[in-house]
Image 1 (cartoon, helix red, strand yellow):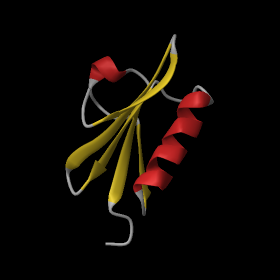
Image 2: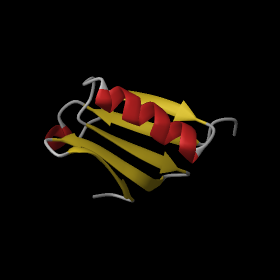
Image 3: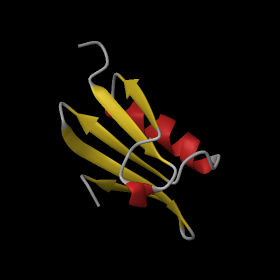
Image 4: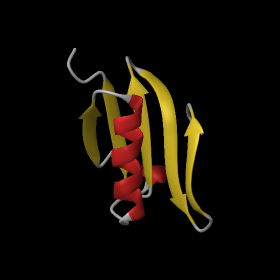
Length: 72
């Protein structure tokens, strides 16, 4: 598989359905792309998956951007 990492982007995480999807080759690329999109205000949350397992959850909130392992 060329791009094994899948990123789901959410405008409103409470709804539970992703508003957009992205794919990358590495964890670093996934997090980098998600942090930029969250910082620019496009999305409120992103979740990075590798082979179906949640690797990172990235959230934008009042205190800034938080990156956590797995689902949070």
